Amino acid sequence: MLDNITVGIVIVLAVAACGLGIWLDRAKSDKSDNNTDAQSKN
Image (tube, rainbow, N blue to C red; front, side, top):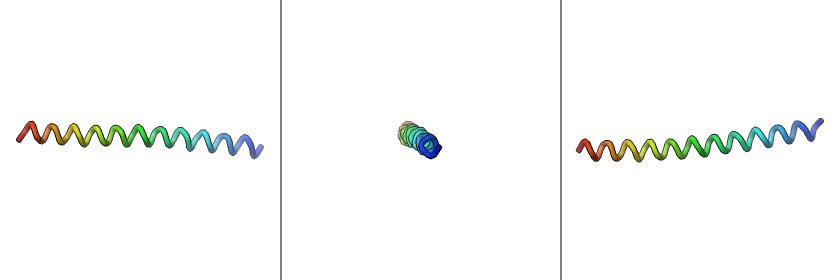
């Protein structure tokens, strides 16, 4: 029972880590897009 719970927690953490990484990548790309937009406006 404990093994199943541990495995579940590890999977959840792994998925959360992947989601966070993707979110950070999108945030970086959004910042770069905003910077290019600001430069084009100037």
